[in-house]
Image 1 (cartoon, rainbow over the protein chains, first blue to last red):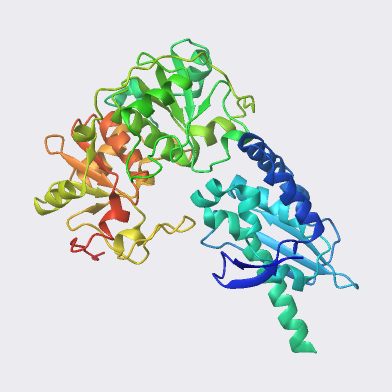
Image 2: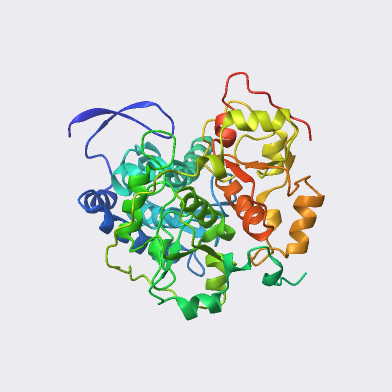
Length: 169
Length: 288
């Protein structure tokens, strides 16, 4: 892996990282989007948006943490549910209110699928630069809060989980 | 109060879903969707509707201004629009962005414009047909407009200042929190970098959504008269300037005052608060 310096758009900090640091499932999604023409990129984002309801919690699923709230950055309530299995791998579910915008719905599906099985620490350490590679610079420019919001929420719940684990240790 | 469209000053500027379904395939009608949600059109739209993105299609990508007349002509030509085409605008958020697109079309002198009353949400709530099929129309040759109607329907900062100093009608259509200076941008929307909060001195606060019913249709002419003429000091014989944050919400109020109440001297200050709140030395009030 080649080490490079990247600026995290959320924290604005310079991170020493590498070009292939993403979980494999997320890397596959990035690779898919990065080579799509703009029209197909939009179509694919809409397809991911369509599958957002599939990321909702299933009946009888149990979670280590649940974080359901309405923030200023998003048009409606967003719920994030985290379950960490015995191997330390994270499983994410999300609920979205009806007013949540299409791009946020798409990012929900992308991140739930792409981060499935990663550890909370891996998720927390994830640089945010991949969002531009998926969504495209133009959409990020016009709706930067929307595009980063879901990732911020997912990182937030992972941080709470890890902080509690450390406090309990 | 039940809305009777014929009471509006220009009832022809509003259409309902039944009218649109009946005229959707008319050769001289083009349905135009314009939304806040930039991918919403792609998820489904009224059959035959074209998509015009308020930022990508109507704004200059470099200078803070609208596109040049030749670019507007190209936009219309590629969407099969001629100067004789009746453009029926609709969109999300109670037609807020649809009114913005309509105002921009008027800026270039396109005369035949209408709004679908209730917009996208009402159409969808009524279970009317939606499609993901993107229509293709034969290209037209839209003549390059000789000029933009900046003077007639657009106001600039110096004109807003003169309006404020003359205590002439100036309507701030942002949320009460933005008007009071408690916040500098609407909740849930990108912060577009404003250094100061408050409002232009003498401006009255009438949030744009005051003009709509719960189903996103426009309120009756009598209710609108009460809100704007009786409540906000708007007068038919005195020119009015409306503003918001970047000129989008105020386009909605501009449409109400111009087409539903029939005032012919309303201008939209599209520089709005993102210009005024950053402008060195611009006077600001923070009164309630």
